[in-house]
Length: 129
Image (cartoon, rainbow, N blue to C red; front, side, top):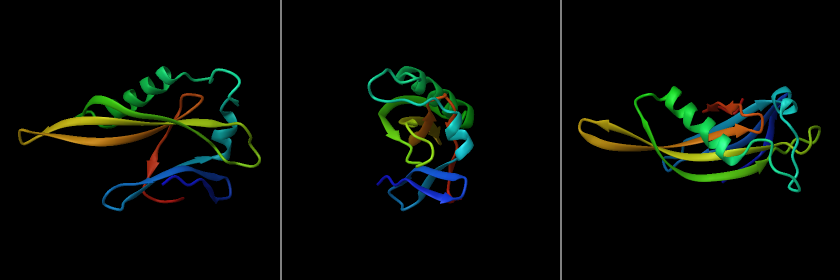
């Protein structure tokens, strides 16, 4: 389920996801951060290519979770940021599988990474700020 709403003045909940255990992760940004991103419409190429967004997402996982090796990209989606004062701003949501060995057992973790069209990563949060 994907919802987009303004959480508090100056903060936008771009998207959120709930895992199989019921834990919700929010991707919040400031209005200023969104305003700095390049505008885009579907009649032109996106300012950040899919390949560039995937590279940014992979690099973020490697830096944030160095014990995990990044394996498969399993989803790439584009979404519009719904902010009535700032138009035509979009983001990528990229799903990546990470692998790590735990006591000799190969464990897999799914990461969702949100990349803005300026290449910045939206840090996930367990709170709707």
